Image 1 (tube, rainbow, N blue to C red):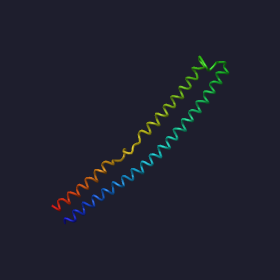
Image 2: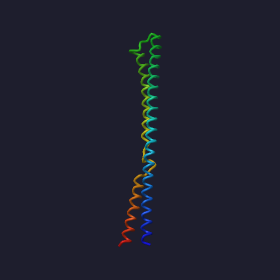
Image 3: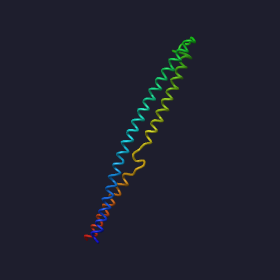
Image 4: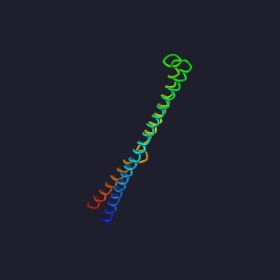
Length: 139
């Protein structure tokens, strides 16, 4: 009977260790997938920022042309105010876009859905139980 209790406790500890290893592999796979998603999101963000910058340059060139056609200089006065307003609008768009990107990146965490410390604690408890069973049977 004593051997059965020791074997049962050893099997429980081995099972806990196996579960911890599997959880570790799952976390590694999740981390790799998350890293790939973050790289893709960063690339999309960079593409969007370049698109916004091209759009800004195009809009600014069009505004300068319209102002020039109307005989209004773009270096001072109301012409300068129009260009400043246009640039401020694009700066705000860019800031909003970056804030959304940063918020989406900050919400991802490897610990959100997983509890590695709970797994480690479970392995430790199984080993303590095994030690107690062996100690009780040998005393």
